[in-house]
Length: 248
Image (cartoon, rainbow, N blue to C red):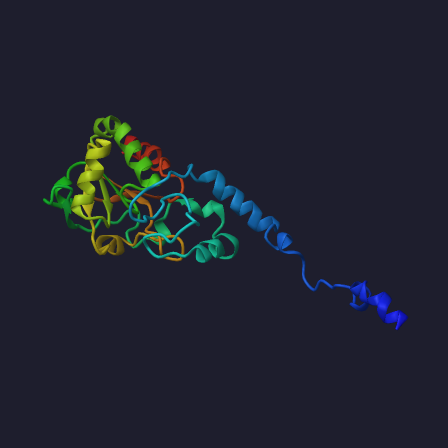
């Protein structure tokens, strides 16, 4: 009875020592490979911008607080960051190997509606260099930054004799509002259903849930001279394409 009384006040004496069969969670989440990749990704992404209204894809910034318009859950995005993500070096690449349209091939013609609902064909621009850039969605941080960078350098594109065309899956009304709000001087085309995106073989990100950000430079004969893919540094598309245009 005396023994029971003494041990009743000290339950720890009756329990075996706690054993750890695996490292603490903090150790698992901070392995050198994942920590290095997450650091590279964070440094490459722009500062998040608060948005209102309907949920949208956050271009260039992973939004872990809610589901995106494409239905990517926070858990899937975390898994992408910690387990299935590609090396940071693959975020920016000349994407000839991933695309059905490759360097040196003739760009397939397409006919889409612009921001005013008028039909526009790629063949209309034959005889001058053309920059065709595919982007995920209007009014998202990365895509807005990219569009404004094209706008700010538009005189340089004109000096090179080139036309700039932006393409996304948004409808004409969305494009019209986007173009007006940011005073974009170039054409935006609506690829609803992503038919042209698929035909050109633009690779997607985040397990295929985030439409890719890819730019093509065509010469005056409609032949692809350069392909550039960089989801998380949208402004780099402008500098890279200008270098190629100036060498044509």
